Amino acid sequence: MSGFNDRIIAEFRDNDGRVGGPFAGAHLVLITSTGARTGQPRTAPVMYFADGETIYVIASKAGAPTNPDWYHNLLVNPKASLELATDSGIERFEATAEPVTGPEHDRLYAEFSRSNPGVAEYQKRTNRVIPIVAFHRDAR
Image 1: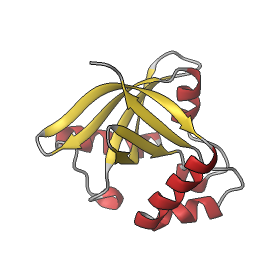
Image 2: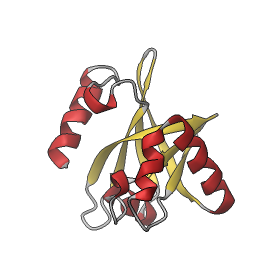
Image 3: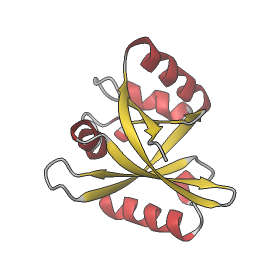
């Protein structure tokens, strides 16, 4: 998966946040977290949705039986750097990750699934509850 992600990351950065292929037209964010074991920066491209200043990401891993590595990294160290595509290029900022749980998780998952039907399919593929992470911008 790393080679696939590396190509998406390079395309995102080379084209002001726009990518083709299976993610053409998708709202993508690059999340750079700190590796839980290595302490090294790790970047992952993921789909997101926003509500005001909060960026939400679903840790689907396409319905795999385990959570993605970036999710585990954020549980250990919730500080992250985000890169979002905007009309004027890529916006970079620091944020703090917070898992979303309970009724708010269920509401957000249903909302995101309505606009992205593949997300609903991911939950059907796994027995785990697919996490949602809220990213709150750090003070500037």
